[in-house]
Amino acid sequence: MTINGKVYCFFEQSGTFKNEFKKLGIDAVDVDIQKNFGQTDHVVDLFSEIETAYGEGHSKVWDSITCDDLIMAFFPCIYFETMSCMYFDFSTINNRHKPLYERIDDAIERLELRTRFHALLYKMVRIAVKRRLRLVIENPYTTPNYLIGTQNFPRPTIIDKNRMLRGDYFVKPTAYWFINCKPTQRLTIQNDKKQKIIEKAKPAAKAGLCSEERSMISPDYARNFICDFIIGKEQKNKQL
Image (tube, rainbow, N blue to C red; front, top):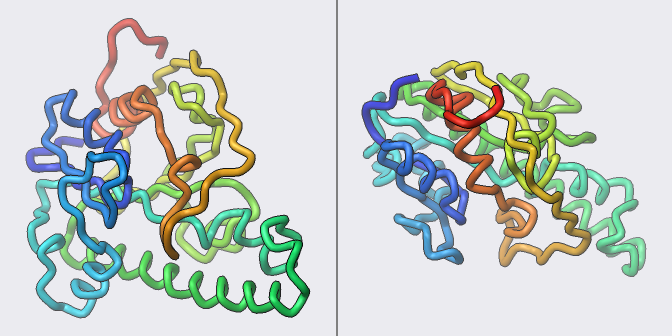
């Protein structure tokens, strides 16, 4: 696709994709609720901005985005992915030390939060559809998964089953949804990274934020993904 405007990277606090877009000559900004890596250009509560725009109110974020721009939303997966599902059958090790009634309380809390963020995800898509904005959403493809395994969301446009082939630190199968745009089709192989294994990642500071350690993406992967699926750019000295 051709990007005549700007790329807005939502939720990804590391700014990895933003920096790689810039290296490729495409203007980009990072928008997030936190600035832990010093890369966030606009510190904004995106959840509140989604609610405002969905309610047809004035949103300083959404009102600044045009049809020439692209949004890449690394929407928080914490309530959709496999580990979260394990709270509902009490099989997660995270609260196994608690008495059963407290584990039930945890399950109820997660159920309520999952519903809230599920609705926020749909609201974000609705905003993009109504305003005809180009949007790419990222989320894990591991199973069981609330969005994918039980079809509580449309089927992904593409699935990257092994991110290490494109130079990432994790295999971590990942799904991408392309809204109002279509992916280009290339395959840049750069399988030269040592796999990272994280058994006890630090939890996020508040509800709705993912563990920074588990959500890290390598710059190589970001560049290869952009070239393969966003702009269809053939890279020199890479195996296709």
